[in-house]
Every structure is written in structure tokens, then in C-alpha cells.
Image (cartoon, rainbow, N blue to C red; front, top):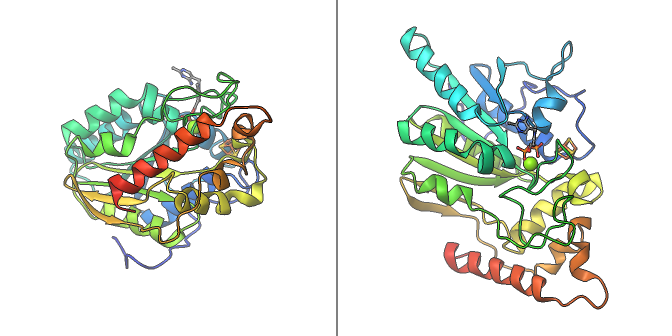
Length: 293
Ligand SMILES: Cc1ncc(C[n+]2csc(CCOP(=O)(O)OP(=O)(O)O)c2C)c(N)n1
Ligand code: SF4
Ligand SMILES: [Mg+2]
């Protein structure tokens, strides 16, 4: 049962006391998602930081049914749960597959794409911390240009994959992006998604203080700067059409976002050419144009 879209839900369905680092954006986001979806929900969570810090027996954080899938198949497991519920004539129930950016954009993309194409009534949530954090901060397909990771010590030379737009191009009924500084907006998008029949996709920017190299108390500020610099556009797409965009009336230069994070320190070393910063500004400018920010 979906309650008022604009109410903030605090039901403690994802309990505190887990083992995430202080200020972990993914822990905040998982709590917001669980509380917005309510008790009548099954979470199918891929291997990754979230699963590791929230599920160990005997004190898991989940107060809703929780299935741990492999790194690569959360979407397929969720699809199986949905089909089983239908076959048993049970339900309705909210089924939410959840995974990190590595799981979603790389190894699990095939299962995700198949789940979309087959039209399962599943919401997939990607917690994007822009690297493989659980195994020691290796780059993923979702790691942005210029980012230092343990496998790109000089800064990543490739672009970040745009998974929300790839999801939308499957023709699924609902795609949205969100950030963990805006509780109301994030939960409204979870509730909106769950009110729609068919496959849905929610992409959440989830800062990782350990991998991004910032203090835990900067998580909210970093999300705001990601939006204010237009690095991370926040929007909703229904049936392939953009239906809402969070406008950015005062746009800040990308340096303000990059400079707070150790993972971009290479870009500001003395004597380093600033081509990467200019290229990152170009990406933000492209977002401004594409989403009319
Ligand atoms: C087939 C397979 N390959 C590699 C791993 C090791 N592994 C577990 S979690 C993970 C990275 C997870 O990254 P991401 O999905 O971005 O989630 P995060 O930990 O960053 O939240 C890797 C490489 C695995 N479990 N299974
Ligand atoms: S390493 Fe990053 S994603 Fe993992 S628990 Fe710590 S802050 Fe969260
Ligand atoms: Mg990750």
C-alpha cells in the first residue's frame, strides 16, 4: 500500500547498528528506500558493501524479507521472486532488487537488461558510489573520468556509463535519479515507482567517504554540490519522456565538487595540466544542455 507521496517515511525497516563506515551514503539510501517501500516488501540485494555491512547473522539490519544474490544476478533473482509470487497466486508485494554501481553497470547489466525486457514488476535500485568499494575501491563502468581508484592510480581515462538513460532506452515505464541529501524527493520516487506496474529503475548517488576521500560529515554537502555543479542531474522519465528535472538556478564550477574529494586530488597537483578538469566541466555543461538544468 503506497501512502502519501510527499510524506517522509521513518519506519525503521533498515535498523541502525550495522557496520557501514560513518557517513556512508549507501547506508542512508538503503534506509530511505526500505522505509518508503514499507513492510510489504522483499529486498533482493547483490553482493557488495550494502550486503556485507547490513546482513551478517545474528544481527542484520533488515526488518523486511531479504535475499542475498550473487554479485551479478540481483535482477534475475528478483524476477524469479516475482514470477513465483504470481504462480502461487500470492501478493501483491513490492519486490526491490538492489545493487551497487559495479553490480548494476558491469557484471549484472545482462540480468538487469533481461529483467527490463521481460517486463517484470520489479523496482531496481542502484546505489552509485562510483567504484567497487567492497573489494578495495577498484574502478567500475560507473567511475567518472579523472577519478583515482586503486586500479586507475593516475585517474580514469574513460567516461562514466549513463545507466539511467540506458535503462530508459529499454522503454520501461519509470526511471529516476536521486541523491541522499533529499529524503523527501528520494522517497517520493520510490513510492512513485512502486505504484507503477512493470520494471522500474532508480539510480541514487551514494557518496562513499572511504573511496571518495572525504570526511563522513561531508556526504550531504557533496551530494548538493554534485547537483549544483550539474555533474549529477536529477530527473524522472516516464515511458521514455523526461517528465521532471530539478533545475539548478545558480550553477557552480565543477572544481567546487572535485576539490572536496581525495579521489580527484591528482587533478589539482601543482604543474598538472588542467585538461581533465576542463573535460569534466564539459560533461557538466553537456548535462545542462541535455536536461535543460
Ligand atoms: C563473480 C564475482 N566476481 C567478483 C566478486 C567480488 N566482488 C564482490 S563485491 C564486488 C564489488 C562491488 O562493487 P559495487 O557493485 O559497486 O558495490 P559497492 O561495494 O561499491 O557498494 C566484487 C568485485 C564476486 N563476489 N563475484
Ligand atoms: S566503503 Fe564506502 S560504501 Fe562501503 S561501507 Fe564504507 S562508506 Fe559505505
Ligand atoms: Mg560501488
